[in-house]
Length: 221
Image (tube, rainbow, N blue to C red; front, side, top):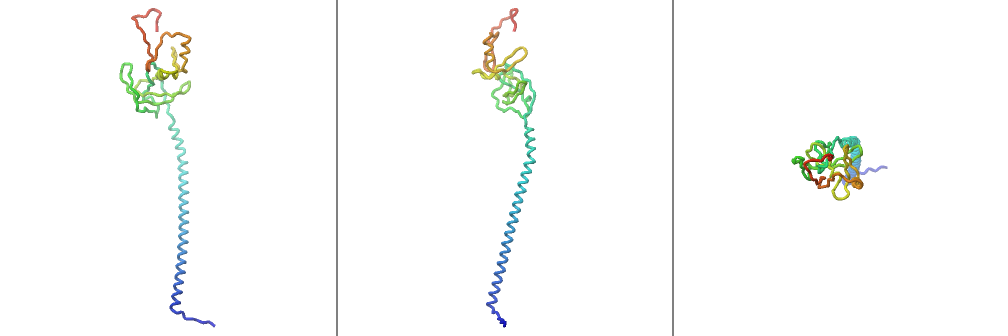
């Protein structure tokens, strides 16, 4: 037989509370599940963002690679043609700023200023370095930049300091002048006697001579 009991108020409250707790637990689990899904979505979104950033960086590097190569080509040394005169009267290698190739500028720290042949003052704007190429190869050259009519190569700068073995020898004849390894002039002087000798004095080669009012026949310089 079946027996039906009439629940009292206390039993009813207990059942209602149990039902409420169960509902709360279900809602809590739903919330936790949603939090997990949201976190996964955020993580997936972050990973996507990182992937996009990585792609953008890679694309940027690819885009700039040819530009960088182009910039290197653009920055290649410019070249100009010059015709320097080898000058024993110049105390330094001197060039006008207008004769310099693009990208070469005086450093703005002049070591000294110069005096021209007519005793005029020649302002020096500083020094610069260059590479010179000719039929016999390449040489480095340091210049003093000043307002001169043409580039001048100083014999004394080319030969080097007066003390020691020197850097180079410079030889002249009626057709050309050549820069050769040091010691060549000394070897020549072992076999011949010079007609005149100009000794080094500072940056110049100077001879001490006596000058008369006329030259005897047959004696010409």
